[in-house]
Length: 434
Image 1 (spheres, rainbow, N blue to C red):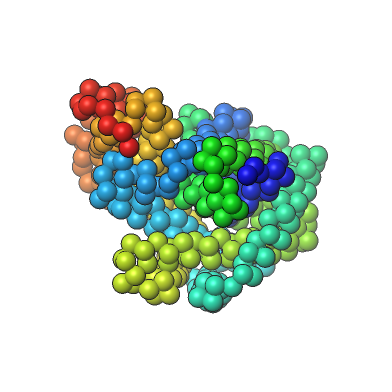
Image 2: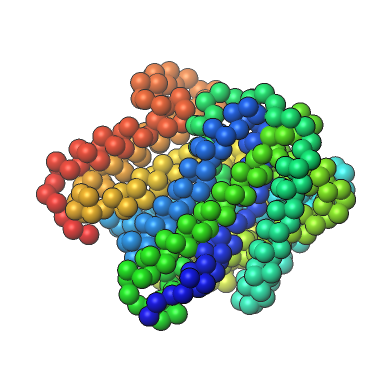
């Protein structure tokens, strides 16, 4: 059985809808403003991690026929459970889910009440998560219906905002606020967290195609890859458009909150109608994203515990933790997310790249093991350095050691160790198929 081009196209739109959340909207315009004259170089780096890596994650899953847990199992079963748990927690209650509530508050509430406050954030997040929990525990199909309506509506609205911003820019592109624009964009792309989600979403697409009666592995692989390309094309177009209108705001927006900047742009370009529409659209987008992620956490930890912890209980715990963290506010959540993302992302990138190159080294398990050890050693040492610097501790020895690693000052110090240890793995053990 073959899929038609129309079916593949709509599969790509479905994947785009899964990736398309609050983070995909709030980061590009803010990066565009900060990048200034270095806009396109910074956005190239952003697209590498915000679009290219998710695409490669989908491709890796399609080729391997398994999700992150399957890929990580090529290193070691215990490592597989640990890294998959960390990723699920990252796209769940520790980062992504609290961010949906905090973003809803910044974009949909603050513009109307005029000033942010702890009480209004607490009330908003409480209402938000009560609604989320009601949908998750009831398993309502309304979420799917909202998603099907919301995604086209949101894309059309964004197209209007972007076109208006290109035709009638609010200012001129300003001076860059940072150096090394590519690496800055590369690291900012981590914030979408789509590369982490891709190794889970890819398997969702594969399972959906199998449910349609497609059994041929090559057909599924090809359709999934094309769906990934369609989703990546859509994301890239939206990112570049949002970044450009962000860059042309110049100094007219003086804040440091990405969520508030999105609201500022839509209000400036379309007036009060724009503010109202983006508020509704963002609220629905965040709700459907949060509902899906809470359900994902419920299913994963229920399976991990061998049904000892029920799905409903996991969902309730997830919502309570998310509610607590959401009240830190969007800016604080983004600040806290940096150490976790710069530690986890390189490991996921290496796993995905190894999975795509699996046949080139004949599935030699030691290539996986050595490369992950090399990558983990660097990112964990970097994490220690980051935490020590944050609390004012003296770690001159670690700092001097890390400074010797190529590209460390650009946040890419893990690249060379990953390559060298992967090469070393080729000579450590006989080739083993997996």
